[in-house]
Image (tube, rainbow, N blue to C red; front, side, top):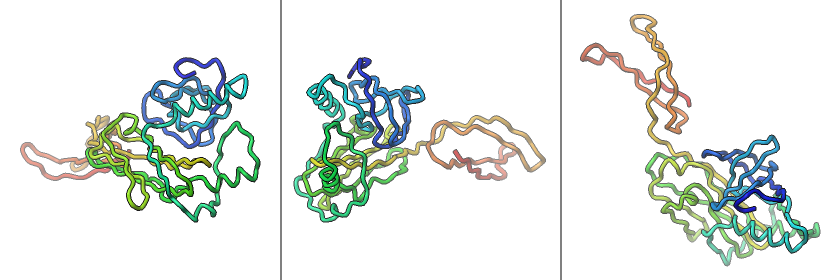
Length: 275
């Protein structure tokens, strides 16, 4: 399955929403079912949606819905291989993080497993899995500035933290640390345009997992606009129409329109464009 078309049909469900940011990627929403066609060496899954559209999604956004195999042993081997592909090399282990808050979890998440469990045991395990008490926050950052992402989990048991996102995938010079207050912090000194995208952090212990997701937008200088219309309405007014530049990433882009005579600027107006 891992580098060529699978001979078995493998179904998966998205554990959170994903927005495509690169060529050949495909967007999907949490809970959406897809068919996995193959997994490349970088850990991206090629999937087919119910409407027939195909594209790539990071494999850590998927939970297996069906496990291929003719017997139980084959299914176990397949499942181990799947999580070997999904697991990151960048994990931090926390050995002692007691919390009294875990007894008051009021929500459940869909944990997919091919092993049958008793209802009472399943509920108890959910209350012992990690909980995110400080989620990641969406950020808008100027090109070249420092990126600092942080989140915090609590767990009665030892757990691991796994970070995913464009910075990690591109193997940039970033740092993942943990401060005295228990925050997991990702730091990058100088961002580039390609660092835009979704960032995902997961905490996992023996009872389950919990994750938080945020979106980083890198603002870059806008490109040159293409004027589509320029028409004088009267002596002091002109109608301008243009296409927004492809670069920029900002919601609002400001332009300056200058009124000139030969060798002399008479006035200037600021025009705001919504992208």
